[in-house]
Length: 458
Image (cartoon, rainbow, N blue to C red; front, side, top):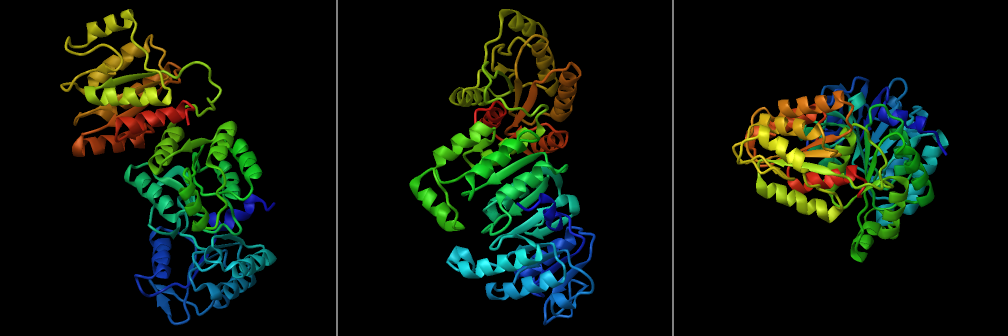
């Protein structure tokens, strides 16, 4: 098995060549070259195009062999039949990695051509992402050999057999201010597989959570073994489509993966501590909350119930959260008479002192602070879900203070936020919260399901 160190040329290359770089802004070869440049990659970048002398202000070369010196990473965007010759040139230039964007291989039945490409790569010791993929973005080295351009640095590493799913997670993470560490589109995974990448990112200091969209795996036993080791270092979340028979057939035809039994896969993931998502939103939300958790831990064998205290300005949103909690097996414990009595002493009389604690629509952010401090002095909640149901100023300041207060008292309790109906102010507050490591969600259901991931319910 090749060492994961051999992937350094893909994620931390000293130089990059784009074979098939184009002068046409609508062509993939132009878009990728531009994203590498605009993303701030600091090493030499070599456009390869026999019909151009310059692209995007960079000197263009007729072939890889014309580039002075070695080339560490080769990004290939040429017709499939031309890829073997490009790979031979890459070998002569001592390349360590290749990202083959080009399609036209095993996914359309052209197995022999794909085998030829990989045989050439192995003969030169080149690791290959793809073919038929959307590329690689690794923000730690300012390398966006993919699209769209995402530059916000974070700690979520996405590995996906769908370039679109990877792009969606990256765009959401950038928009919410949490950023990504990596987005890797596997394509046909003719060489580098999800297993190689899980192993690599499990040891990567820039990665805090590994997020997988996976239609099938070629070596289930090795996949589970690598995941079992990875979750000892950081959380792993997987979305595996194909719950239905037609969905499984669609997955098998997409990149010619062997989809196998969804139920067996889910059970195996649970055994090794991998969190399973059912939707793309779940994949993102679960990854986000596990990345932010104070003490990421395996809780699948937890015997005591996971308890959540809900504080809300919106009674309806609180009810929705309770319904979701019951569906997934999260406990919403009632308040003791003593706790309810203390809350009545410090809150306005029209607040409803139960769980959910309804602070009503006239609440301020400081009212949440008062209530959480009172509850946390005796309440044994594992998490506090704060639902801001209106444009409530200073919410991020209050939540930040509460988080620091719990930490100073040695509490492992998590603070999770749902900010719904807050308009522009709410968006600004959520951005500030997440930049401080406090996960915030758009709906009560998404927030509670994310808490379920913390509780080991998925």
